[in-house]
Length: 91
Image 1 (cartoon, rainbow, N blue to C red):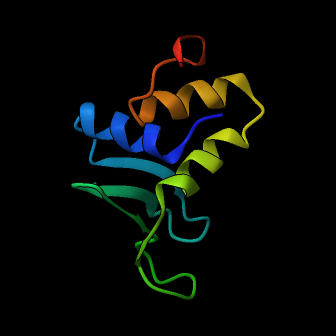
Image 2: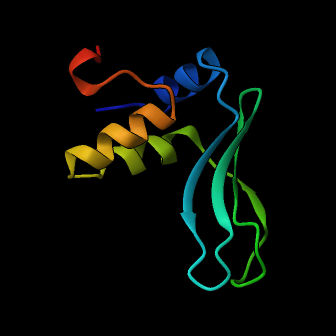
């Protein structure tokens, strides 16, 4: 299973600062995870839903999101987006 520390290390090593999550079903804004140093936030961006536009997230929450996927194509795309090696190359 992928850990939050692995996700953080991969994003930092690959110098990835943003990973898209999904487009808002109402306005189309692309929600995303944004990294600043070792801090991760989720940017909901639009005013279509309640809550803050940017909220802190744990690295474990991202690892959990990737780990819960069951489609190999989605797992591959997410791992690539966060700078992680393919599952077959993971420790």
